[in-house]
Image (cartoon, rainbow, N blue to C red; front, side, top):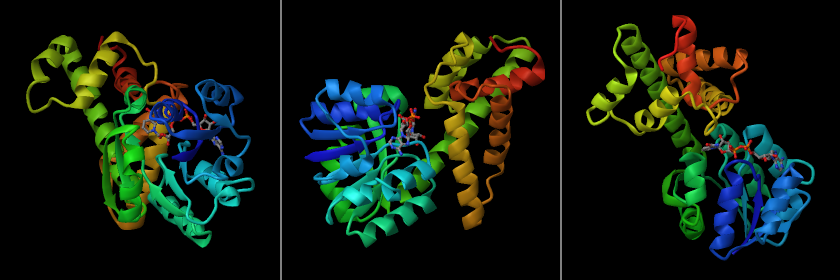
Length: 293
Ligand code: NAD
């Protein structure tokens, strides 16, 4: 297919490269010229604006930080809606607020553009491997039509409901991950203070009910003091903010999310917003005055 791809960050670059590898023709755009140059070297056509990236393409994919970025790139001056012909499909793969997806989809509908929200889980390694988990919302028939393209970037693509359902699913994912990292951090500090090596605790419990993908991925990072992102605390704060806003709007109290949000805010205030979210253990270490390692 002829695809416009907007947003070539940590995730967008490998995702766009997988689309090129699968034989799709890509026009790409990003605020950072060096990111555009990297994709141009891999065979993509460079565009200066989202409008140019959208023009003449059947499908446009956005992979941007948050709701305001997607609004600007799609509805703003020089945006996708100035370049896209009626019938174009927009798939926003960014993690944004579900309400924002619905607003942007309504603006798209006025121009005859169909939109899906299709955020991803799996992080940079799975973006590189093309094995992301993709969770989508929007018209089922539109999802079915673009599913083969999504599967060039992901191992799974699940239709979750109407527009916004993909991002609601992603928020649920981020709540589960955040609370899980906090629980692992709390448990490992308990072990450390009680005189049991957290590395032994990890080995002993990972095969039991406490085992999880989060425990397996994040505990070694905590023990090795490797907090290179991965998934930055700043981005997780953005997701938990969207979860709290959505929870308030729909009447779903999120007490655990609120607590972990304040832990992450503490780390950001300490200048650690750029660390991987496994650095959440640093909140407990700050209180305890010692590390778990
Ligand atoms: P990033 O900050 O690395 O990349 C975002 C890119 O968007 C940047 O290159 C920026 O220049 C570009 N950009 C911003 N506004 C633009 C505009 N108006 N026009 C053109 N380009 C614009 O972010 P990322 O880590 O790639 O994450 C992208 C999205 O994916 C976020 O919503 C994030 O929450 C989500 N996500 C990230 C991960 C991860 O592990 N990094 C995992 C799953 C989901």
